[in-house]
Image 1: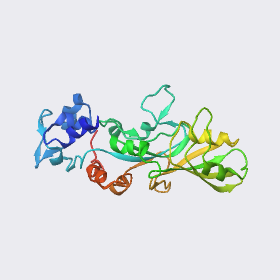
Image 2: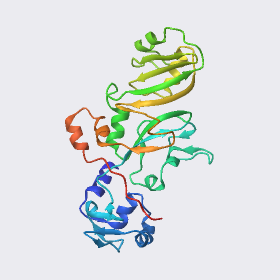
Image 3: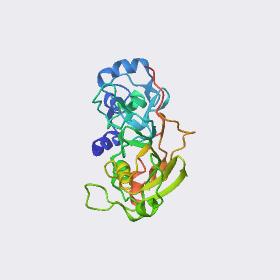
Image 4: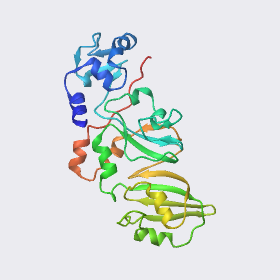
Length: 273
């Protein structure tokens, strides 16, 4: 998918209908109608034919560049009750994609979650069209891109949790210890902790808490790598684009950074419905 997407965006000649469809502005069958309502130009010349081939870097949509490069990456503050999935198993289920404009949901390749949160967890989720970034966040060197969580506990603290988590706890049904985790007490009444993880296992936090006889009342992810959630700037249910500095912070190799330099986008221009 990533190689296909790069060939589309980096090509010096792309059909207008394919370009608009890949960027999520409309389906190919809707391009003719879209061109009647929006101003699409190359070198100040209007584009009127959907089969016309253009250089994406030269195209203006309503007098603004249609795109600055290849892939879009965003930061989402996911509220409780939303599922990190593209499929709606139940019509009552709310998806993280419901928080995004239709244009972003329709982009090709689709935005994917770089590390999911379950339905009743909230907080920071990074979504990207760039498979390189997603893999780096999910499968990259754990100590380089740790995940930070604020957790409210149901039961009082015992006092030995910090030592046990730093040593590595044994999850039920698994043969290997968890990687050492930093357990920091934020407050005792009600009990609230901050947990730093350098790996991601299935329902890991809930299972780790079970090893010490406790449960979570709420789980909120507040950090991934060098990106931290500020709810004053990004309230629950809102999103923003990942900037270049944040994007490159996930790569500790200079060569990887250079390869990835083209994989960010600026805000897309407004369109007429």
